[in-house]
Amino acid sequence: MRILNVLALVIPITLQICIMVLLLKRRLQRRFAWFFFYTIYSLFELIARLAVSGNYGMYFKVYWSTEPMDECIMVLALRESFLSIFWPETRLRWFRWVFWGGIGVGLVYSCWEAWALPPRMPSRLMWLAIDFEFGLNTVVSIFGLLYGGFIRLFGILEHQRASAIIFGFTANGLIANLGWITRSFFGTRFKLFSGLIVAMAYIVGEIIWTRDLLRPEWKLPESNLTLEEMTAVMARYVALLQRYLGREA
Image (tube, rainbow, N blue to C red; front, side, top):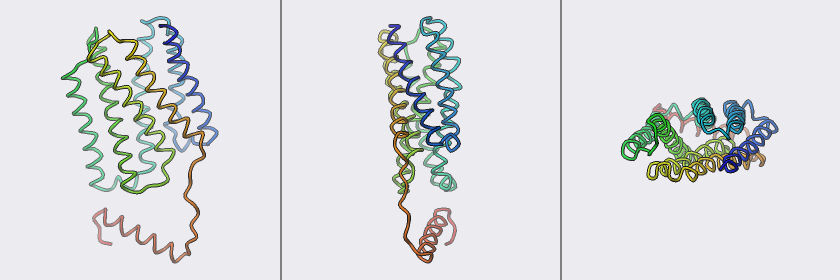
């Protein structure tokens, strides 16, 4: 049991160090400042949990005292990556309605799920904490699906780094919720299994980030258009944007 707990922490720590080094090597620490901060915080968080992994009571306290800050920074990192791609589109009314409508559906579903299938936990505090994590993971999962849909809808090509960050968190949320479902149906009977699912969820997210950072960023090829042709293309884009904004081209 202790060996499994250590491995579930040692592997993420190793990957987290790789991610931090790659962010610095690619000089992305300013472009994605909140994600870089999340990487640093998660590294110290994991080290602290590893240090007390042999004491369940202490591990429980360290885990739940560090988790809220982890989740806050994650939300800021998601927002940062999303706006790096879709900042102009946030001015579109229909875009805001679709986005917040999708997030609202996720919140309603997670509240219903927590009410209909509450996790079988020994204390109400743990029950509420796990329900909150399930709700957050559900919202993050829908956030990632909305982001992927918007990428396809707008035909955006240069989104590699931001997409990797968002899809890493999305994969983490989707897989981690399997652990929540296990707790809901079986309580602590399969505690080891549900705990490993959560650990694997984070490792999958880290693998997505590491894989992306190991590859050079794809760039659009340089255009050979003349100045007049570029002006005409820009005029078409401006007219399209004005139409979206409800203005007269």
